[in-house]
Amino acid sequence: MDIGKMTLDDIREVAAIATALTQPVDPESEIHRYGGAYRIVRTRSAGVFVGDLQTRTGDECVMTSARRLWYWSGAASLSQLAIDGPGNPGNCKFPAPVPRVELLGVIEILDVSDKARAAIEAVPIWQS
Image (cartoon, rainbow, N blue to C red; front, side):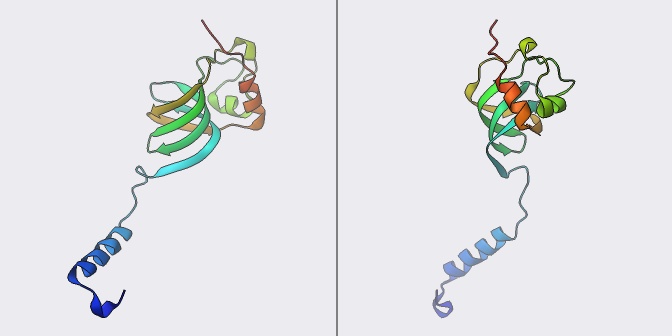
């Protein structure tokens, strides 16, 4: 762009771009991409899910191949479940995975070890 030939509209556009670039980014509006990393996600009211975390924006996230961890046995907490997996997989109640779920009110996201993932995935699909 030839600065000597800039119009008033060109100057306004450059000013608007410069202003936008200097504004702080609201971390609650940023989309965090997880690329399908296997995670345990706890929500305020929908319960706990394990699966492939795709994105998180504020306290909302999208998971694929997600199983609800309705009841687990052999782990004192979700933290231990994420590290060791369920100690009593036959007593766990993990329904079949859903292809995709949008979760609201996310309050905790835990990395899952390879050991825990293998143990969680070995839990039979629970049906009432």
